[in-house]
Length: 325
Ligand code: TRP
Ligand code: SF4
Image 1 (cartoon, rainbow, N blue to C red):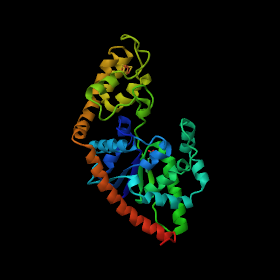
Image 2: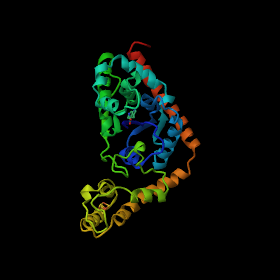
Image 3: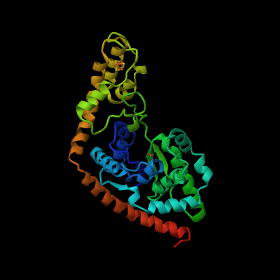
Image 4: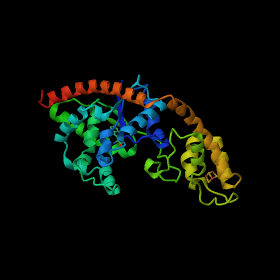
């Protein structure tokens, strides 16, 4: 079986953007690949080194949601990056052969340094972020990395680093392929990208009444000020992100027609979509309610041990290849 590796920074409770952007895909891959999914807690420190308080709690909350959506310890290795210190050793060694200009020209690096102006990101750790990410993937000889488009430059760099390593020391690493998640970015209730930091997210663990309330208030076509004002679904964030994703073709036809002719109101139109969201989240919520923080900790402890066993094998090969044996 081919190897899949992916990770996520510990952001705590997962929202619909996380679910459709990554988790659903991970769950699907489990049957067909040898999967390694991990909490990238060191990556969290690259940007949040000065607000580290919530990392441990966020790790537990995130893993509980992973289990609730169907990540399965019998089919995947679920672990925590910082519990496998070999990642740091491999990142150090890969750093020896990674030219700094490769890191500086990375578009995600440049963009984030411009955007996250509330903190000092002129650090060695932040520049080296993609080297650590390359170590995460290459440690397990990952062949397929399911990520969103924003991560594609990092996986490209992982391939370049693997190629350079293999050229210098002999073939040790496969060059991993990016498996792009095709779902477009889910928008939040205010029409911007769904994100915890914008406060516009619908969480997998939200109660049904909260889900209803958030989606009922979600922004629509601003032309529909009054009930009899017609609108255009093309200008409706709810329609573009949620309706399109959740409703059947017949429902969409009915909603589109009703919107353009003002035959239905926005709430009535949304109720059709909300019903689907509720149906999707009900089994996840039920599963989540059976899980306790200690379950996440136990899953990680077992996964960490399995990951370390693989990592120590890779590191023995790497040390030998680099003349360190
Ligand atoms: N950088 C990724 C993110 O922010 C998380 C990540 C860390 C990752 N290491 C990885 C993803 C290895 C895929 C493979 O989402
Ligand atoms: Fe959006 Fe439906 Fe309202 Fe039209 S009727 S603006 S598609 S929610």
